[in-house]
Length: 195
View 1 (cartoon, rainbow, N blue to C red):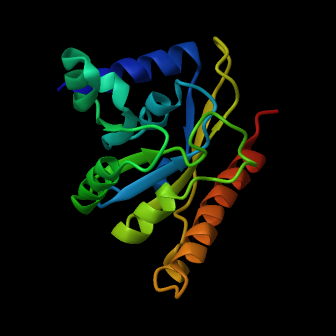
View 2 (view 1 turned 120 degrees about the vertical axis):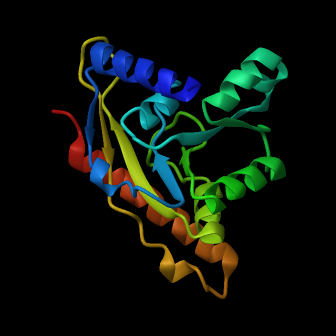
């Protein structure tokens, strides 16, 4: 109920203030585990990424936000779960895998922080995908958050990571899988930049 209401409000907000356009929604599976991997340009990216989707999307959010009971409850209702900054959070990884194994959708920003997409991606998304078998959907936010200017989000075709599943070198496979995901995100940006 809370998520449905928030989803409506974010749709109204982004479609009115930023004239949101979504492309490629047909690439999002209707069922099963999905990891949506997107570039990161603003603090508004997490709600924007999930706004066009019919399925509930889950995110990692910094653990400090969960110190306040009321906010922690609200974030939980909105699909967020805590992650400790500055290192690998075993609890966050465990929670991510639980969500994926139960067929949920997770949103991940492989750049880690707001960054340029030519930077190397972090390996978390690829690791979760290889461990869970989830479908990986690359996505790109195109444009700037300027009032009454169009911002577009493009969802690409699933990234095939099957070649890395049984690799003899797990570390190398993880790097290559991460680069393949980042490459698809960069391609979406290059092919869809607003003129």
